[in-house]
Image 1 (cartoon, rainbow, N blue to C red):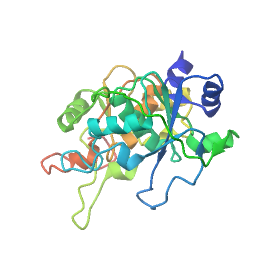
Image 2 (cartoon, rainbow, N blue to C red):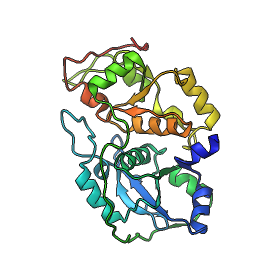
Image 3 (cartoon, rainbow, N blue to C red):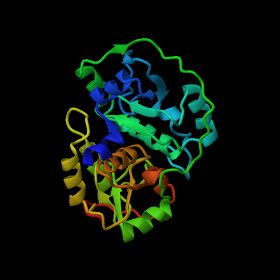
Image 4 (cartoon, helix red, strand yellow):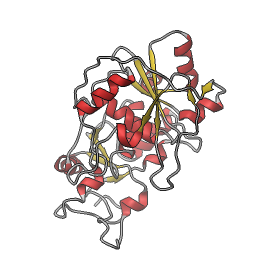
Length: 285
């Protein structure tokens, strides 16, 4: 049962290849990006055969706004036009992958599920795992057949700022950023405040994966999140800096059968309002 739950959101490379060889209806999407810290492009010229090229920071978000934060959700009409160009169909199993520990692929997964696509999964370990498995790659660019798919927003549970604070008080709000950002401290040069939402629990998204970039096994993920309070007794929500790492954690939780809401605007939207409380330090309160 646990394996079935995990496979409903994460596919190993050999499992994806088996789908392809069996002639199953599978659409593969490569999520490319430019590292915002190093300016290093993730795409090195090779892709899985037939993979449709997408861009993490343009296709799965809108331009930054004060209310929506650095990475607001995409306009559904714009995303629908792109989905039609990509040839997406609701009957197909859509598998997304990246070259960055599934961080950007997880965002694509969440956005596509939010837009109403029923079967979206992430390639566990991404493109590196595919190559390590010795599976075929190509330089050829895919030319998908356009579709007439219709998308609708709101098919994944969301939180806004007020809802996040309320959930932190009554349930469990996980902060998926790295620990230094959660702990916070002094800022300089007019930078926004550092710290965390009151009562939020630190749960860095990088802990979801191993040194090799694949998600930790089910038992490890279950124990890790149980230690943070995810025991089935409370509603769970997740936020991060701008809705990327949070999607990664929602995906990790889904892989162990736990549903969680996400605050898409996350910290970048939270601190846009100076009246919202900011807590510094290593403890939730």
